[in-house]
Amino acid sequence: MPLRQPYQGHSRKLVLAFDVGTTYSGISYCFLDPGDIPIIQGVTRFPAQDHVGGDCKIPSIIYYDNEGVPVAIGGEALQESVIERAEDEDWKKLEWWKLHLRPRNMTSSHVSDHDIPPLPPNKTAVQVLADFMRYLFQCAENYIKETHANGPDMWESIKTNIDFVLSHPNGWEGAQQSQIRRAAVLAGLVPDTPDGQDKIQLVTEGEASLHFCIGSNLAADAMKDNQGVIIVDAGGGTIDVSAYYMTMSPVSFEEIAPAECRLQGSVFVSRRARGYLQEKLRGSKFGSIEDINQMTGEFDKTTKLRFNNPSEPSYIRFGTVRDKDLAFNIRSGQLKLPGADVATLFEPSVTAIINAIEQQRRSATKPIDAIFLVGGFAASDWLFSRLQAHIQPLNLMFCRPDSHTNKAVADGAVSFYLDHRVSARIARFTYGTRCSIEFDKHNSQHMLRSNMAIPRPSGRMVIPHAFSSILTKGTRVSESKEFRKAFITESTEVTSCNNIATEIVCYRGEALSPRWTDTEPAMFSTLCTVRADTSKVSKNLSPQKGFAGLQFYRQEFSIILMFGLTELKAQISWVADVSTFEILPFIS
Image 1 (spheres, rainbow, N blue to C red):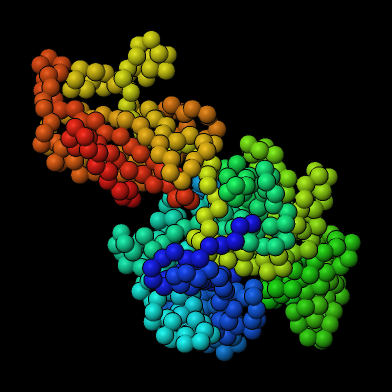
Image 2 (cartoon, rainbow, N blue to C red):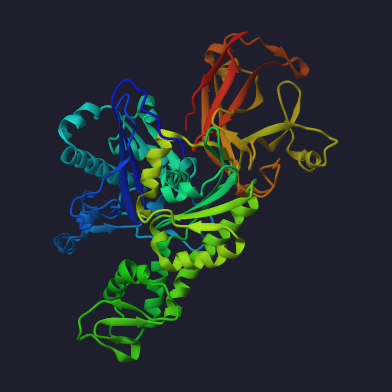
């Protein structure tokens, strides 16, 4: 891979990347000094954190008091003194809260809000994310001040010049991206201004993981010219699977299939373990909620990670040597589990990953040569061996590129900011807008809707419930590519032309060219509304003669979509005079 070039900016800047995960979170950063080659570093020490090292992360846990104030976060939330005080003062423990942000249209029939610990009263998921990001920022500030030579002076030199890279699962869409941006403002990371939002870049966890693999020596050795690779980021909540194609001169990667996201991360193995334990210990003196909670916690921390052979028993240590119930395979404070039973707890997640890999292979426009497994769940030897058993017969290279899989997304997010190795992406869905279309009596679909026909001031008859595609699913999109489509409005009042407002709509169905929103209404959802102030233009509109001499005004405009980065951007353009286009930025 080509070496990273020296920073060309004129002043020192700090890049901070937050990987907010379902179960664990981490921070990476990079100082950009003019003329120096950027070096990615990680925050490897957090408050009350036992583990310190290159892959150091903190639990994504928050305790709230009865006033909704965060009182313990991360490693602090695991301290015995905090747990004891939480019980005494009835604090609310919150974990897995990131899943409250998930798109409700994701394929996740096995997950509902009842399966996720509820949010505290009067707290939204965005506010919780803001509280957590505020804590991560404080951790980063303290770490830099305490670790670097002249740390306080270094911080003073960049504290007003910080760019943030915030990662999210592949399946998080425009609504979730907007929530992340709102949380960053609430956390005080950036001001609520256009300049403030410019300091934030969002990246999918799949693309961040690709950049991490590019920087990993083991993965880089396996990446060759004209080779297709699949990145499997197996995390706590989601499984993010992405496919890319590498070309040389210059080195770049193109996304070659719509990215996949499955809600089958490691927390769901633990959730299935809880249900299994409740059923297995029904009737045992150790079947209380407290014992089940303790056993599930131990399974999550140790048993799940150590499991690698279904022919050997697994154990959950939860009590003292005096605790036994031989009828339920409990002795010396240990519950003995058949290895085959433990394997079944992993199987839905394994199946989801294999299905996502195969979907990527089917959808990819280039052949796949290698698959890389990263993320916290990748540390599971059983998961790795199960996937290896499926992939090896396919004659594909399969590996975990680095032992520090926990830091893949955070490091990769900074690399994404610095290197931008991905030159083109694939649209996951079809995007467009609802509109009306001129009635054509020779069109059978129009005749089916003839009772809906509406007269317009010009005398035209139009049919509502039409869908106009602007960017179709599977389209290759470069960073600079615009997708544009022209529309018109008609009104009898010129003041109605002072503003344009149109919805950007996403179609998630299987039709290659959806035309009508009333055939699959559940497949269409509004992503945002784009608004434009066209009052300066409306003053110059000339009235036209329409039906029965009716006077009306006609306004032309275009909707522009850009999807070159990981966020969809929408604009409205219109002719302001003979030679000038005015473009209004996207407003959600």
